[in-house]
Length: 165
Image (cartoon, rainbow, N blue to C red; front, side, top):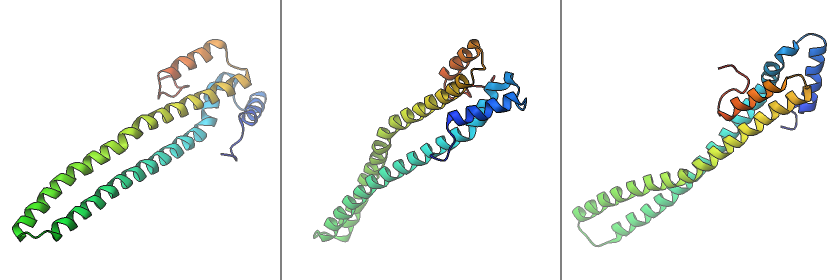
């Protein structure tokens, strides 16, 4: 987001808050996490929305191809010289065949996305964790053991990097 403040700008504001006693220096990690929380939530929401759109588009395209093929086969059945009973049986067979094709097409369409989406989510978490660490380093207010503890927590994945849970 071009309107989001840079990490340097955030560091300046936090340094001022520390110097004025608005935020105690021992709360550096919590302050950084709180400030970046909204930004990170918006980034995650944007990624999920993009992934949902991509998933929806791919599924719709796959299903449209199947439905076009099904319509063509229905037209072929209607054009055949056969009794109504034979046509009804042919339509029932067609429905069964295309139900399987639909499910297969949906599965195949999203299967390729799942790995890509998981990788993108992991990359986003890594980037967000890096932002937290970078901002803490800029503030130069956290002892090395705290930074190491944060790094260990972030490697556990999905966990809030600065919470004590």
